[in-house]
Image (cartoon, rainbow, N blue to C red):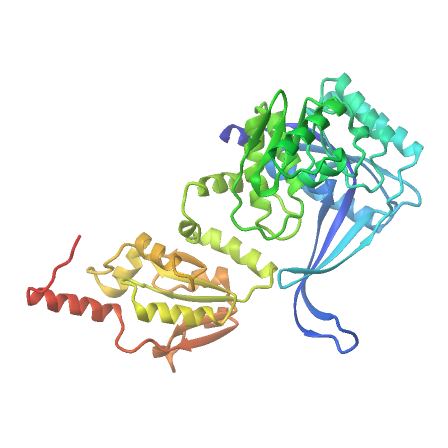
Length: 484
């Protein structure tokens, strides 16, 4: 896979461009005016959506991208062009059609839930004049691209005449055509190289309810044969994808946590197109696309997957779930950013946690009860030695981190090397900082970086020092010894 890091193929995306607009916040009350939630908006963002999300994914992978579409002569169209320019994507193949509105979807997200969506758009087919102009531009571009990706969101750009014309132009020049389809009638995609519906879409397009492997096989080969495809590729969500060429092959996947499936199809077709354009075989392209899709469904909202994230995800498949909860300083910063977008209340505490005992567990359970996510900062071995002396820690940092991460109360563990977690707290800036009750009346390091500080009393008589003393006393009496 590492060869793809230096590959920068030229791909052209044809389809329905739009703007995905998000209002992020949280809701804690019902409006007195009507039985609806009141959302306190804390953040607002805009990203390219529809075929634009395919563009986003291709840029994230390192492709050279051009985009062709029809938009409206409106403010949203101007903003869309600016967003493409910001990505370094050429927008000269965008046609403005009088009377058409550029699609903008606004979503209100509160506490990880989409509350409502409202759309501003035109869904009528584009005019013959727009079709003619796009076909002229596509014909000029065909000699400069490796692959044509068609992303259909059913907003009227991909009329039958335009779609068939684009496929014909591409096939005449030996350019691969991959389609992410929409609707029930797939006849306009006839002659494409490959098509990538999900299982539900494939069922609707063929009229075959896909309920088992036999019906999946029947639907997949019907698509391939009736549309004259080189391959039909049916995505199967967490089960991976089925490839229909000379035979049916299922390429499995494993997704960790699924937050939002928005845009997973965009990621699949972008990754498949990229890998194939770089010379990768279809099975390898499917495996990588599965990994990329697993990355994006772990994020909220339309999202992309970089090669670094894909490689990290594939590496994670060979580690335990507990290992996945141990994060580096850079990883925990990214995790916190994602959690904030979901409206999660973040709790942080820290310590050496040398020999895990009842007092530790009860302390952490109490800390976790203050919010939605508990992050534990763990002193590294070097840090513990500076604080406690050369004889400590008893257990090395990975062992300590793993045991903490295995606790139900702990969501993430991250190791820091300094004597205090202040630099780490700069990245996390938790809503609640938790310390032991012995800090009563004392200054708590990082209190200026947290929303509030809460003190939790330790369980009396339970401490690592007392456990070590007890073991030492047993050794002196001949009652025990360290087992290595």
